Amino acid sequence: MTDPNTTIIEGRRADTGRRIRLVANGGFVASMEETESPGQAAAGPDELWIAPGFVDLQINGYGGEDINLTGTDMHRRVETVKRLVRAVLASGTTSFCPTVITASFEQMKDCMTAVRLACEQDELTASAVAGIHMEGPYISGENGPRGAHPAEHVRDPDWAEFSAWQEASGDRIRLVTLAPERPGAAEFIRKLTEAGVVASIGHTAADHDHIAAAAEAGARMSTHLGNGAHPQLPRHPHYIWSQLAEDRLAASVICDGHHLHFSVVNVMHKVKGETLLLVSDAVHLAGLPPGTYRTHVGGEVELLPSGRLHMVDNPNLLAGSAVSLADCVGRFAQMTGSPLATAVAMATDRPARLLGCAGIGTLEIGQAADVVTFRWNAEAGKLDVQAVYKRGRLVGPERRGEIVPRT
Image 1 (tube, rainbow, N blue to C red):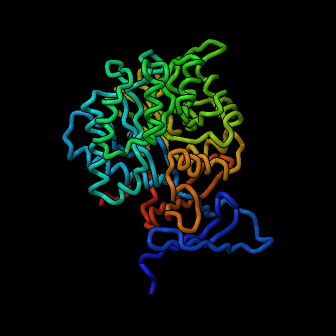
Image 2: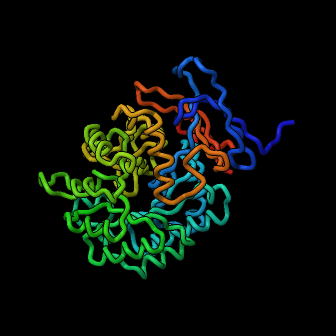
């Protein structure tokens, strides 16, 4: 009789290239055995690959579900978080940071509270939420660096305000994006660091000295480096160069083929090396079929088959990211010519370590059995998710925009 608590997964490891038989029991990896004999044929186009479930530090929404809902009651907010988790899991991402963006104090508090309640009510949600990413409101108020964040709610860092949000979240805020040029930012970064929260530079118009001061105070990352910036910058110096040059800062990039030119991605990869990681920064339209949609933030937008999401009245303006982290892994490998193992590490081990999340991001005995299997087309830069396991339980895959059944 088959043990219902046991799951067996066979395929080729994305990190080593060796075929294995992975056995998960009780939600953890119980054993891994190589099944490939010397001289066995190399991977073919129909090969099933195995990797740790992807870890995304920045997701605003997915599959029609938006973490930053406005004008609604708490019950709907909480149920939205639960559905969002299931949609994200189906895409191959097994741990992620719901990202709460710049808004009024009450709106942001409600978003934090909804994540806490969803985690308290639903075991699957609790296991998938690695922490909350608070993106704003302590960011630049300038057009360009501010991005789509509402100008009327941008403000200076306030530790009492942050503490109230952290309490509402049940201490789940693990990552904060802020602009280091805001008055009081350096001291705020020091307090975040002392509290075990990752401080990240983003949506900034800072000069070189402010960025250096932020790193000295404990900032550890640059959020979606190269985006959330002025359309034109001085040749040098400017805040992208300064963040690239700062070895104390890791960097996340949105590698969807639209937010950054492949030349920029290559430069960032060469400079940041093993401290570069991938995020999707997905909005709620990610995972939905191509078409025209009306949103509460940008108005009428168009989602193309390529995953590009732009404003209908100005196609040159992006309206957010509409791809999964799995898509970004494939496109990064294609853009840079990097081995699949490198691209996968940028979406698994690296973000997990940055956030301090033990037990996820690698395939090791005793680790959580968070696993994704996929087929890989290197020439097309296409990673086609086949199955997704959370703690050994099958929770995916996504099929043509469909979402995992709501349970």
